[in-house]
Length: 414
Image (cartoon, rainbow, N blue to C red; front, side):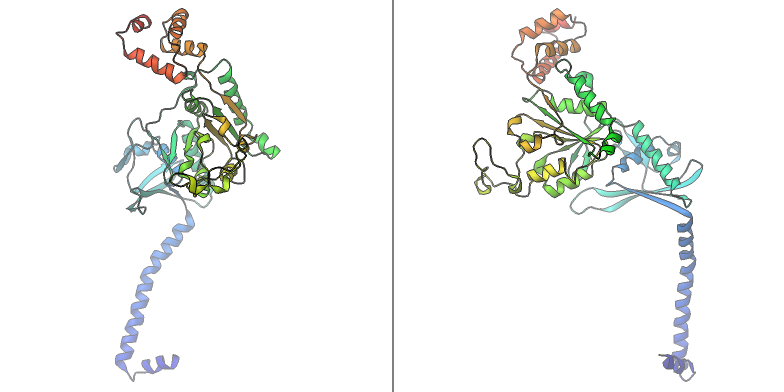
């Protein structure tokens, strides 16, 4: 190769020598033009810190919440309308592109990126925030992240999330307040005290090496307030609810979904007694001493890719169990639940919600109609004995409020 270059440049072939020289000069010029840009990129990389938050992360919404409290947002001229942060009213956030702002005396840039293409068959496009600031120590970014987390805690509102290829917030959800739930005397206080003790015992759990999670089973006939009570628990402790329908998962996807649930959350399994497990999770029916119906005997076939009992147990109390969460399970028939689910460590607190007592109905009546006397409330309860559950009695009171022409409404609404 060296001899070839010598021959070409020796002058015997001026045409080839000139062409090679032009090629070398052209290549060097292209390379030299790229040097300033590469040098600039290297320099920027050495003196700046960057942080990226993708929409797959729970903190993505936290960043939006933080934006709403920043004064610089009023100076941004390109904004997007957003309803995922505050469903009750519209919010403005920076539009896709690069924006400048100052935070704690430091210059920051934030670039909001939104992809042009959807995620495969999903209609939703991916989004991300990329922050950049001058500095080399990560402590600056940690302080910035702490500010975002603190903002989220100040504005934390109990929300409901359902899973559909990722956790999605239910915009129309309104949490129940604890004082709107009427339980038999002492039950609500004991339950709330138990949750409060758990929330205050994080360090103690770690000292003892005990997994920091707690399971609650709310069981009883339909309409007794199990879901409403779960909502009240979450709202009282500023926790969000992540509702899981086991029929939509298999063992692997259930583990992945649970691992995406943030700390300080409620993971809700509704109607756990209706769970249909796969072959790996089947057990003998203790009462009949026979195996459950075989796959090919089930009408339409069983979902062999569904959640197995062993998979569910592993999520509740195994290596894949998340920490700092409450597991809440509801059931209409506790007798149908496998005994392995009921042991301590998986279910630590049971609460039976039965038919409404006279005292519960009387209390609920007086909350609806503040001016009614105790005698009027008791008389109304005795006149409507067919309303067995709190849901039925509440529906009766709502219909009474709406029908102001009926004699009973005239008494209590006077």
